[in-house]
Length: 329
Image (tube, rainbow, N blue to C red; front, side):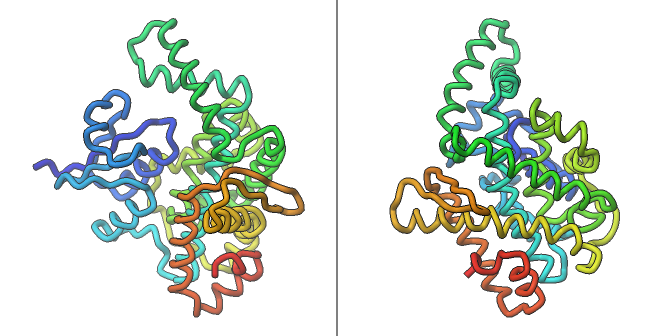
């Protein structure tokens, strides 16, 4: 029996990059299998139409990146991606969720709205699917991809009304991250935390695209270096303490409290009420989209994680100061 894990994914998938980065960090023996070049085997193995798909050496199938990492942490505990301080451990998990759900919205919107981004993204994916296709075949596949992605934009809340809001959210995120990463390698210090694996791959994907990538590459060198570093992260030092992190990490948590958690809570309430759409005011501006069941489940998981740490007064003070606490009960 092979001792290697097998990862089916694609370079254009932030979640695939997330798992590959984690396996590289942990030095876990694995094979990286381009999903479209191994489609028949992928279809036989997958339970859900999601990537990445991880096959353990014993044949166990693992999907959904957050629980995959949590399971792998039990098998390969060192170096841990969770700070030993329970306050930081929860804050890291909160940012991981923020990256997975909110960062993904920003990445997906900017990748599939402008003509330059759509042209680049559709042809890169088409070439992954048809590596030996001629130009005409690749162009035809790219058109099919564009149709599918146009249909999926509504699922992340991307439309004519929300487009300027999403662009503003991205600029705000980049403005927060750039100074925070000026004097540290990762979000919580000189080693990657759970948070880095959630947010880093989303930013990495944006750095590859024409529009968001131009912004990052031209004026955000610290972010670019971090995004690239997260493709093969290393343990280069300790996690920091709150005194050193607070000045520049607190704004990121405040962004979660101002935008992500109110949005996620409104979505969960819509799902509970069996409403197909929801509207929520985010920092004084109305944001409307289709409700999403998966986001509601992941918020529930985050709230369960908070419930286990709810007696932590230091954590509660940080969450209250950043506007996050009210959404975690």
